[in-house]
Amino acid sequence: MPTIRGSLALFAVTTLALAGCAATSVEPAAEPTAADSPVSVTNCGTSVVFDSAPQRVVTIKSSTTETLLALGLGDRIVGTAFQDGPVPDEWAADAKSLTSISDKVPSEEVVLEMQPDLVYAGWESNFSAEGAGERSELATLGVATYVAPAACQSSGQPPRLSFDDIFGEITEVASIFRVDATSLLESQQESLDAIEAVGDGRSAFWYSSGADTPYAGAGIGAPQLVLDTVGLTNIAADVKSTWAPYSWESVVDADPYFIVLVDATWNTVASKITNLETNPATANLDAVKNKRYLLVPFAASEAGVRTVETVASIAKQITELDG
Image (tube, rainbow, N blue to C red; front, side):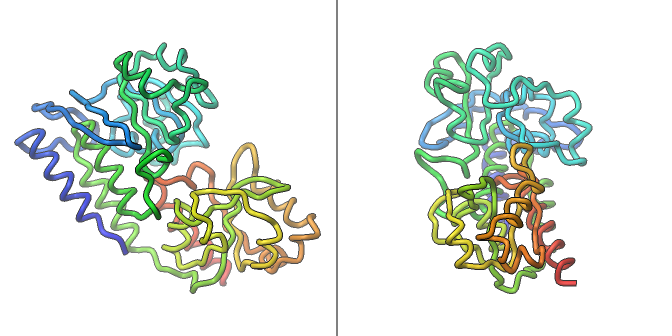
């Protein structure tokens, strides 16, 4: 299993440099350290300097909102956008006070109305002239930007996502806010270590969305990491992308033992099952005939603080299906 030693060591060095004293715990609420020294990061090829811990944050996508909630930073979120589903129960109480500013990617105007000092985005594409604004434009207005590193496209995307990458994002975000991520990281590692790889190398198709053309969890992102960790073989592993258009012909040829169904409001599990069971090309797949479906909420399908939980859920589902 991956370890968090590297992430914890990096955080320890950063904390000592910033504070020169004991780090602040994230429980029950996160506060900046006394010595609020600048923190510099290179994010998707963009250099960003945080002279102090951000106080007013707009989050775009569930993964970023949940990272801040997990770090005890919900009070810094002044607006959320493009949330992919409900927040898990463990953070639901803190999420009740959050304000949604858009169901999709917010416009720059809407973002600026919240007077943020940071916009934390789950996808690099969220920053565009048609979206939340270009990163360079926002910087001139005094608004820092940060993209979940697993979602970098222009530069810096992990060649194949690992838990070290996910834990590294948690560590880096904690350093930006000058809080201690140790407890969260140790909890994540403990949960990860407890998961058994019950897949036995059996094949799986990660069905993210689409009907005529399926959109698959491919070979370098969170779907691949989840399937690897639980011991399943991704039939789309050779596609060098996080998610990518696939073909039903390839799915039929592979005849996967399991099919992972991502549940999204715009493409539900029920609609996917109907598509699989009524399409003559897929109705005779072994996984379809035997209803070997593994379910994942869309908000839990992207890299972040819920990835370990996603692995544990799939492992449990496999064990239940195996009887």
